[in-house]
Length: 459
Image 1 (cartoon, rainbow, N blue to C red):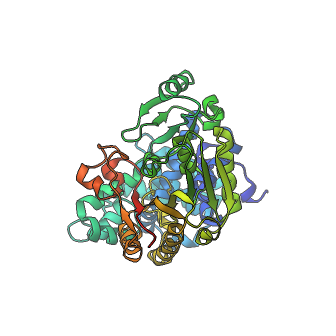
Image 2 (cartoon, helix red, strand yellow; image 1 turned 60 degrees about the vertical axis):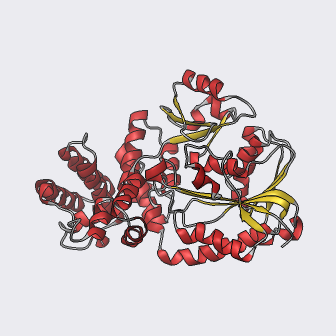
């Protein structure tokens, strides 16, 4: 009998099972594991959608699934094999979260998986546990919201307890629940039109000819939400470099920088290149952009994006962002610091990320952000612009970080964002402060922070 790891997926459920196993046993990122497995095993469009929802959904609701299962197991879930453990999780997800899947079908398919990836004994065990859960599911209740709001929200909306506790203090009950709900919603497939090669109406027409539905994004002028395609590489318009995948909130960062053709720009943490290529687009590919990143393999993604989009003005450099001024002191008209961060604003796009984050990680990130921001400031010329952004929603990584920077760098001042960012994003008074915090449940975008500062003297 072949090793279980070598058994190839036969169904959409098997594909989802392999993703869960890769995430748990190998530490793989869910999106990379899903892309790899679906790429290796050609499924129908319907089966791809089913595998994606089942795999991502089971990972996203992991704590809730394990909590449900714990009430029906004599031995801890951790004592089961990785295959059996994840077969149970997939089945419970279908029973509780996928209304179109009959509970009996979820149970039967799980038993068949247990036979393929386990033994007759494990199949019998899976059958007994799931049938007991199905009989009892109406009696399974979350902790009371009134009596135990943390556990209630953590289990009902599948978020780590430490994060729920934090958000309740920062945002209050209603916004915490709304934020958790937004994290659990499927994010849109958002792309940015490459206006160096095509205008938005023409791209919409091309995409519709390829069977793709398009809707204009709310805030970003060159953004589209697209649906109805198997993979991006199946689209001629993608292969021709007519657009790039980028969330709407990320597109707004380029507009906050607001570079003009002919400028000298540094993107200090540039990989994978979404913002870098947007800056080049806004500059009409005229001028110089230094695209810096510390990791060569990540910088290759920037290069690949530039090649596909036909961009020439970007100069990639493998470099530690904390050492930039040795070569670029007071050189740049604009510097973008899209800083390494906790990523708590993009949990809806990374189903496994919420279980990888720990509060102890944040102080180290804050120190790194502070060092990068201070070094980047040395590269800004007199009168130049410094933009700081993160895909986080924590105050200490965002406004708190900017305020600390300004206290130590009085020659920089926050600058009005009116005219750079759309008026629909916030009122004029809010944009005039020079920074904006985007939240998934309020703006429908990823969570993002953007601040624009200008250097006024030599410091």
